[in-house]
Image (tube, rainbow, N blue to C red; front, side, top):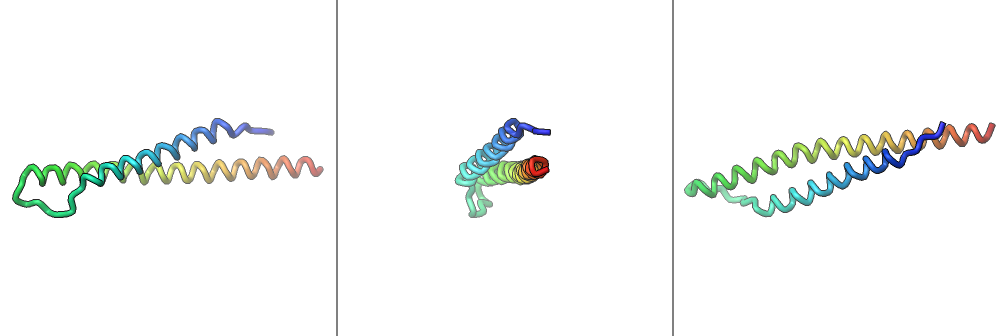
Length: 93
């Protein structure tokens, strides 16, 4: 049995690109982050809260998609290795 891994590899590449884009997006959002606490200015405080919330959401999805991409890539590599091993052992018989 021979399975073409091209569609599965394309899916993994798309996941990897999405993770990389999310990392870049997080970097651009984190530039707006201000490390000092603004107690006196309500608008500055609200901006800090909004940026922190955006970063929390990006971090949550970024971690989840990174784990999915890593596990999917590992399973893809294992399936390809197994298929190659079975094919090589069948040729030796």
